[in-house]
Length: 303
Ligand SMILES: [Zn+2]
Image 1 (spheres, rainbow, N blue to C red):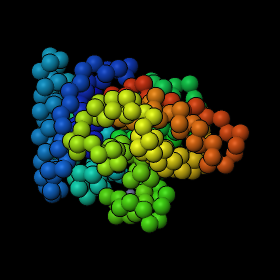
Image 2: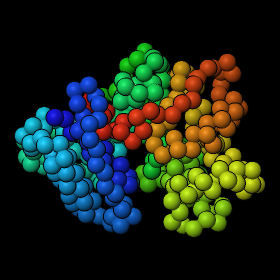
Image 3: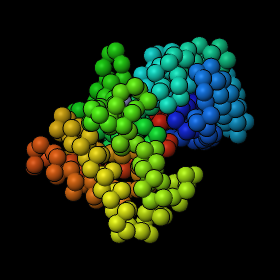
Image 4: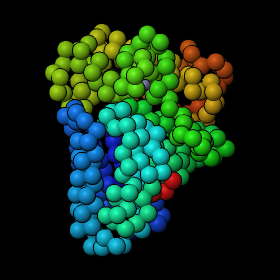
C-alpha cells in the first residue's frame, strides 16, 4: 500500500492511495502553528503526528506496517530528496525527515513540493485532466503552484521553482515570512484574506472559515464587504495577470480553501483580469479543484 502525507501550514493529512490513484482512506490532525516557536519543536510535532496517523490508517485498513511500499510527502517550500527545506510557515530551515521515516517503516520515502503534488493530481485525475497548458494555484495558508505546458509538469533541476507565492507585486508591501516584502501570497493567501476581513469588517478574531463565508454571502452588497473583496481581487488579479502573460494557459485551477469562495471570487476575478492581462484576446478558463484537500496526498505518491 502507498501512503501519501500532506504537510500543510495548519494540518497534516495522511491517506492510503491505491494503484489507480484513488484515495481509500484518510486521517488528518491540526498543527497549531501559532504555538510553534522553534524548529526542534516543529520537527517533533510533525513526526509525532505522522506516526499517529500511519498507525490509525494501518489499524483501520487491516494492512500491516510491512505492506507499505512507499511513503510520499507533500511539503511546502523547496524540499530536497530527503529533507524538508525552508518551510517558513513552520519555522523549518532543514529537517532530514526521510531518514527517520525510512528507518521506522523500512520503505522508500520521497518528498515533493506540495503545490506540485496537488497540481499533478488535479492534472492526472481531476479538474485539469482535459487541458494541455494550465496552471494550478493552491491558495490556502500560502500560495503553492504548478505549471503544465504541452501536458507536462515543468520541473526545474535545482528547486521546485514556480514560487508564485513569493513573486513580489509591491516592493514596499506587506512583510512576508520569507524575509521579503510585498510577496504575492501576502495579498492572495486565504490567511491574509481572513486577517483583512477581520480587521475591515470588525469581526471576532477567532471567526471560523464557514462563519466568515456565511457573513460575506449574507452581506455581499454591504459597502465594507464590497471594498474588502474588491481589494483582494485587485491584488489577486495583478499576480495572476503576470502568470497569464508568461504562460498563456488554457485554464487556471484554484485549490486550497480559496475554492470554498468560488461563487464570490471567480466571477469578480474574471472581470478584473480583463484590466491587467496583456493579450486582450487571451482565453482561459478559471476553475476550482475537484480533488480538493485530497490532491496533495494523492500527488505525493503519484509524482
Ligand atoms: Zn515571500
